[in-house]
Amino acid sequence: MATQSTIEWTEQTWNPTTGCTKVSPGCKNCYAEVMARRLHAMGAAGYENEFKLTLHDSRLRQPLERKKPTVYFVNSMSDLFHEEVPDAFLNRVFSIIESTPHHTYQILTKRAERLPTYFATRPCPENLWLGVSVEDKKYGVPRIDYLRNINVPIRFLSVEPLLEDIGPVNLGGIHWVIVGGESGHKARPMREEWVANLQIQAEAVGAAFFFKQWGGWGADGVKRHKKANGRVFRGRTWDAYPTAPHP
Image 1 (tube, rainbow, N blue to C red):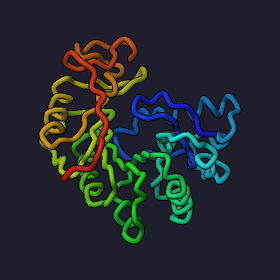
Image 2: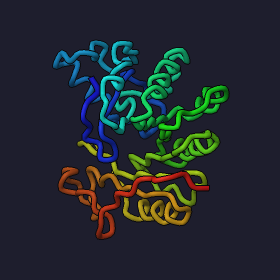
Image 3: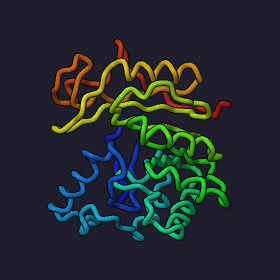
């Protein structure tokens, strides 16, 4: 079933696919892979294949069973646009999204190069927020251009884990910027000035800015549990959400 999420910027998760493969440095310490192995060890349904990409037909109708308007993060445990997910299965996922306009769906991918091809002949649903992961300059930043050219109501960036200062970046056409550091005992540090660079640029174009977490390293450069490091950036929490598309 779809589950209540602990992710700060969504309400529920819906995983019609599980499992993935690594494509860039942001994948190195993948939380979903660690969780899938744990669930497999516990005998949890749906994780018989551990973190091997798996399509779950039985999960497709889950959002239809919920009448309360809900924000769903699609595939917290996978990448919906993984190259091994056939278009036919994607079509079924988007059919559910279109048939439940009372819900809002957030889809995040590192396979941004697939977006223009898939959506070339298909309109994006009006209740879809589409995002890409941006962890660095080499792999992450190029994904933004693929996203920018998709006609979708809300475009967002998940800049997590932020692994370096990505410098000046074109945020035109981006409605929401989420930034966060890496968690876990192998977490790589994030610096305050890297976050500030993105916050300033998001504000300049009118994009909402959401600071998710410091993760395993605090603003002071000290490694500790992510709960102790918290979510405060420069004296406050940043919890903005996009409200409407802007130019």
